[in-house]
Image (tube, rainbow, N blue to C red; front, side, top):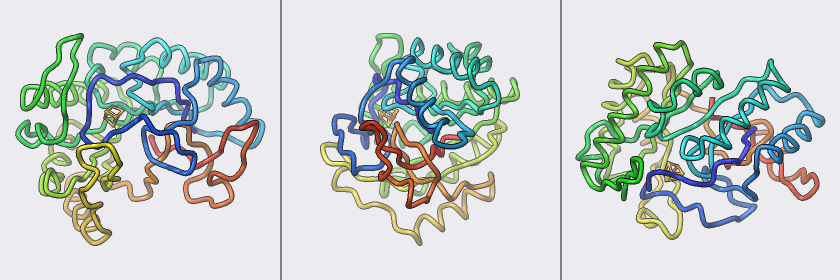
Length: 268
Ligand code: SF4
């Protein structure tokens, strides 16, 4: 399950809009409520009481590492109360090198979203990147983000952490570049690759872009699979998702004290 304790973000992806709270909408960046660490533990306890929980993850609604206080406090609390539970976080990676000590101490699995390894491609995907208060745009921002992501993967693998790489496929922007991303992160030792189709969202630069079709995604994944094993069951979960991927009974139906149990995290 996802614990939505991280509202802020340090970059702006051109496909992201975190302003909505539509309970029927299931996609990353969406949550019914931002929780503080105590609230997250109450939410987790509620889920544990309802059935076994194997993974607790932090995947937003912003970037976990742009909210390091809440994120690390929550992961620490999960470790103390549920020592056998896997703990993961899903990040854009910008702040990861600087926070590596805490990440390695507290997370068992890390997902980094790498949409481009060429800054010319990345410039079309990100509006800005905020590194410690300095905002960078276009290729300069994309290059800084890419360098942080590559360094983060290298350090995580050096420390023995399992690393999955997500790559959002945006037709006409990075769809012919996904294999390059897979090759680059495979070279750093990443464990798993998840090419995921763009979910066009209203109010974003990409709102009118087409969602890549199944055949296109199959081809892209096959190409990327030459470099890394592919994850194919990603359900693009909300930042407060809980349950089992694909389990209809759990999908947004079982409201417990006003909170919805949707689908299980795929951020591992
Ligand atoms: Fe949105 Fe995540 Fe991109 Fe931040 S890193 S802008 S939360 S999609």
